[in-house]
Length: 233
Image 1 (tube, rainbow, N blue to C red):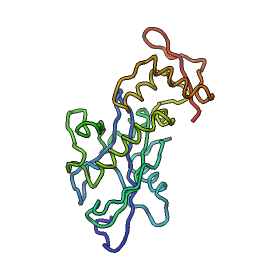
Image 2 (cartoon, rainbow, N blue to C red):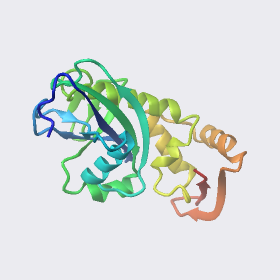
Image 3 (cartoon, rainbow, N blue to C red):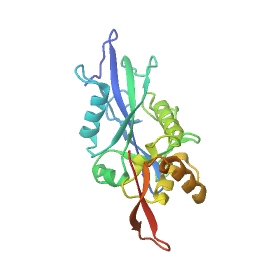
Image 4 (tube, rainbow, N blue to C red):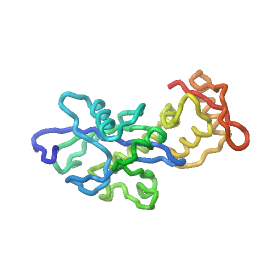
């Protein structure tokens, strides 16, 4: 579908940056394109937006068709309008950040064509667990997906300190330890945090207005049990 586009018409796609945190690392889902253009290149999942649907509706449709998961967090990232970004014709991309906790994503990935890459926009680009690497902007990725990924990671890093987007990676926002939340922040920001400072910052930022509160539950672990918290999203 849409392998040949009319040169005098404007098209739009919805493209998804599906992100999760696994093993203390930020992960991004990509798959290889099987059809031209960019056949064989790694790419973000995407589809053309229908005439009778919004970009957001197309994004949700794509997510359910390619990777059915429940309770994903979907947020519009940016609209990419560069001339020549698609060799078939004039195509705009409405890109979305999609966050899915690893526990919900793992089962859906079984048997799919997706692979988990570790994004590093400050380094060479993307890495697989087996060491394969992709360089953003070097032709390893389809279309302008390298630019979309770089924009998305930087946006996520910028927002995690002043919005609740980091909590979206948690398996259960109604029962989590501050240590689990710290793991998310460290994965997104790509750097370790001092536990005492992190705890103080989070409590000052979210507990003062009542959005974050401690539950009467604890998480059993080695050493001292960890208190569990819940966040009102």
